[in-house]
Each structure stands twice: as C-alpha cells, then as structure tokens.
Image (cartoon, rainbow, N blue to C red; front, side, top):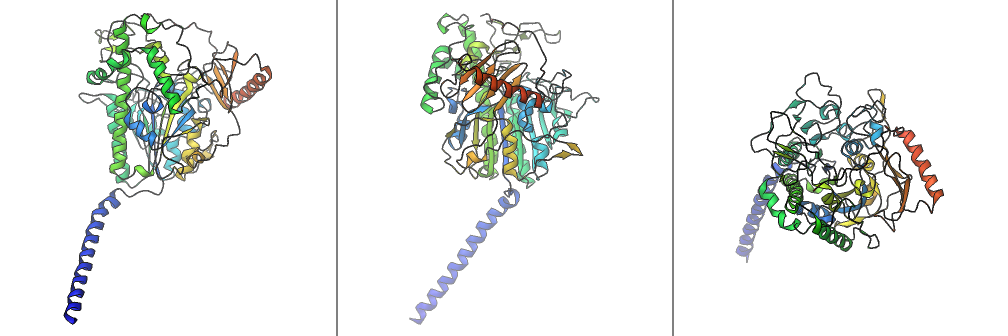
Length: 559
C-alpha cells in the first residue's frame, strides 16, 4: 500500500509538471500576440464610405450585387433604415468628419469658393475633424481614399495651400486622391502624406485603397494604439472602370433590365423588413423608356455590369480590412461603420474630345462604346440610377430620399448590447450623429477651442443608445440644403423642395416614404411651421442666402 501511494505521488507530481509545461507553452504562444496586438482600452473606429451608391445596391439592403462581406457585417450587427447623408460628395464628407452641417464648416456646395461663409469650398478653422479629436485620446489616425475637401488639390505644387489637407487636419497618415472622381487606373492627385504618389503597375484604385487600409490596421496594432481609420472608396462613382473578369460575372444578370430588377428589389426589401409594404414603388423615371423599348441594350447592360463590378470589388476590399482586424485580434473591439455619401447618380457625362496627349480616349456617354477600361469615361445613366435608388425617386444632389437616404451598417461585437443579428433601426439618424457617437465611445473630449480659436459645438446626438437597444432622443428636426435644394425631416413628416424656385412639398414618412403623395395643400399650417424652422436653421448655420442660379431643365439622355 505504501509503495502504491508513493507511485501515485510521483505520477501526480509528473502530471503537475506536465500541466506547468503545457501552461507555460500556451502562455509563451500568447505572449507575442499580447505584445504585438495588445487590445487598447478604447475601441478601434473604422468608417468606410462608398461613393455615389444607391440605397438598395448592396445585398443586405435588397440588391442583387454580390456583397458577402458587407452582408456578413450586417448579419452580425445592425442596419439603419432611415439614415441620411447630405446628398453629394463634398458636403457629406465635411459633415461626417466634423459632426456639423456642411455649411458650418464651409462646404455647403463643392470645392469652389463662392465667397459666402457657408460656401468657401474647403474645411474652415471653425470646425474640428474626428481625427483632430481622437488624436487627443491617443488614437493613431489614418485616412485612405478620396478626400475632396480642399480647393487646392495639387500635391505636386510646392506653393499649394495644404491647410485643409488630411495631414493638416489631424490624420497621422494619408494615402489617396485629393480631388473628386477620376480614373481607377491612372487617378489624378494621388497623394501619400503631402507628396505626389505614383500608381504601381497593374494599378486599380479600389484595390490600392483596400491594401493601404489593411496596412493601417496592422500599423496601429504594432504601435499598441487604438485606430481611427477613415476609408473613402471612389467606387462606384463614375467613370465606369473595372477589370473584364469582374464585369463578365454580371452581364447575364443585368440582361433582365431595370424594370424587372426594380420590382425584384422592391419585393426583397419588403421581405427583409427594410421598407413598409404600404410604401409604393416609385414609378420609373419619365425620361427612361420601358426596358423592352430601350435601344442599345448590349451597351446598357455593360454599363450596369461595370457599375456592379465596382461595388463587388469594393466589398472584397472591405473583406481585406476585416481580415486584418481579425488577424490582429481586434475585430471584436472595433466599431465598424459602413455608409454611402449620397444616392445613385443620374449625372450624364457629356461627350467631348480629350487633350492631344490622350486622343484615343472615348470621353462621355457614347452609345455603343463599351465602358470598363481606362480609355473610356462614362456613367451608368438615369435608368440604372433609378434601379440603384429603389424604391425611392430622385437622385444625388436632390434632397428627396433617392438623394439622401443611405445604408448604414454598424458592427461592434464588444459594444452592441442588443441582438447582433442584422436587427433594423427605424429611427431617423444623420451624418452629424457620427462625431457625437465617436466621441462617446472613444473617451475623447470634443474641444471648445483650438489654439485659442472657438470651435462650433457638435450638432448631432450619439447613436450609442441604439447599440444598447434604446431609442434615440432627438430634440430638433434634421435639416438639409444643397444648391437651393432643401428639406426638413421630423420623425413623421418631411418637407422637401427641389430647388430655390420650386414650391415646398410635404410627405408623411410613415405612410409614404417614397414621396408620391404631396400633402402640402392639405396642411398649410404644418408647412408654414416647418419652413420657419428651416429658415431659422439656415440663418444659424450659414445655409442662407445660398448662391442663386436659375432653374435648369434636366437633360435628356439619348440612347
């Protein structure tokens, strides 16, 4: 018996030794991860934005384009159904980055200086960017992609005014284009930091943005810092540029035409709970023929196939960013936000000749000239923009739902207390709310002054109550203005005007979010009160007087 106990003691000691060895090896394996990828106290914040993409283009919002990465983020997070942008590139970017209405930071229009305080064409010093705020909380800040918030966008000019460039507005690192849209193969204004950058061989801008964004994730992890990453893709903004193998995947799909696809999206969106069945599908744009009557069908199909490929490639790039977050063990503690800067774009690229150094290029919407490569420069047209904005009417620039309604996906495993199962949030929210949300979750402090200069207070409210399953408490309506197009959004009612010389229209957002039944004549007192509220807001934020331009008849695209 004594021998048995002795033997048992030896075995037990060996087991303890074995356990210590295994535990030590396990800790040793984890140590490099803990050292290199130590989770910061504050969450990473990643904001990804598409350019000129319709409300229903991606799969998780009812579209037929293949977006598995975004669909997965949506399925594991939450989706907003009433999120609003500012209706166009520059104003949206200004509002997103500052938490102000675009006029308050000087970008009420585009990047042209119109000698009015709200329309100077670049970020002013009365505002502060997310990057400037988050750097004070120890964040590593990176902007990748399209900037479009400065009048002087020539990185090769040593005399350029860089005061509104990313590096001068709080970003530790910048790689992208300072101007707006351009070639995906040979983009103008490509910049790294403050200096010109040259495209590599086989360059495709979407892929370059994705690679740089993933590298920024890894860089922040190596620095043991929380990350603020702003990724502004140009996809799917015109020109229509995508590799042939990606375009080929979509030709058969779009041979169905815009009418059948709009109806299919509408039915899917109802099934997914994104829209109320009582909201009627808006009619096909009157400038667009029925698909069966459309001319140049092969060309029309190619246009939408390239557009879809651009979104598909962006989605794959987002997958690279997610992979980098997973590999550095940071995904769970990353607030990941995806949105679009405005609705689908009905702009027509006019046909014109190019300079002598590029005479072979085919510039403009030339029927029969198939888009896709760097020798073409065209857009997808009104018919397909109408599909992109299903079920809404109108487009980019206008303040109807088709211009300003954006998908918004929020993914944050460690921070969403409610069900993370693709739940829908049906409360109105806006770009101005993102700064307040970021400040709320980061532990940063929004400043009252910078270098003794007063900073305007944030306009929005934090969206964090929604992450906890509670309702938002907003005390004021949401307001809109762009080149005289105006709107006021209350929880139920929306007042909207299609230009400085047009009458106001009133819509019931509960019964008619597709804005088909104008109730203004029935409710003149409500209209009067909402107009008065808009006037007070416009005077306060410098959105009035706006630069007056005579009304212009929309151009009819010819097939």
